[in-house]
Amino acid sequence: MDINTKLNNKTGTGTGTGTGTETSKESDKISRSGASTGTGNEEIQRITVSKEAQGALGTIVDTVNEGFFGGKVNRTQMANWILSKFSNELDDVTIKQIRADHFDEIAMFETILRQAKETGKVPSEFKILLHKHQNYEEPSKKKSTKALTKNIINDDIYK
Image 1 (cartoon, rainbow, N blue to C red):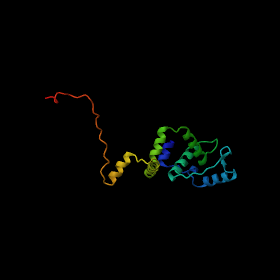
Image 2: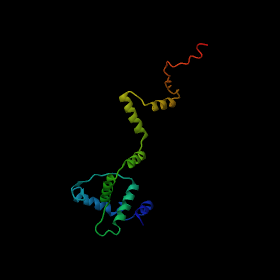
Image 3: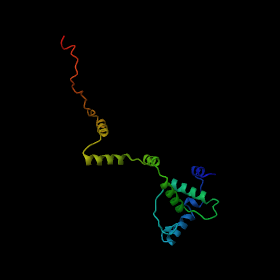
Image 4: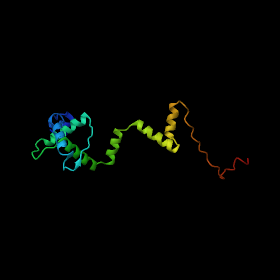
C-alpha cells in the first residue's frame, strides 16, 4: 500500500502515530540529550498540530520505518525533514494557495482600516461597499466633459 493510500485511509496504527511508547521515548531522548535532536547541535522548538496532521505524520513515519533496517525515524525527525524539504521547494503558487486557505476577512479589514487611518484615504471599492451597506446612494462619479475645440461646422450657423 502506498503512502497516499495510507494517508487517505488513516491506517497507520504503529509507533509513528504518537500513541503509546514513542511519545515517552522521544521525551526521554529529549531530556537525556540536552534538548537536541539529529546531530546534537540543534535546539528543539515545539509546535502544535491538529489531530489530522498528527495522524498523517504517524502514517508517514510508519511507512518510512516499514522495511527500514538501517535505523528508525521518529516523528520529530520526520517533521524536521518534511519542513526542511518543503521550505526548499516553496514557490509562488504554493504561497498563494496557503494564503487562500488561511485568508481571514477580519484581519484584511483591520489592515485596510489601519492603512486608511494612516493615509486618510479609503479605497473607492470600500466607499461603495459602505454606502451600499448603509443604503445610501453610491457616490456619484464625476462626469467627464469633453474639452471645447475650435473645430466646428459652420453649416447651420449661417442659415
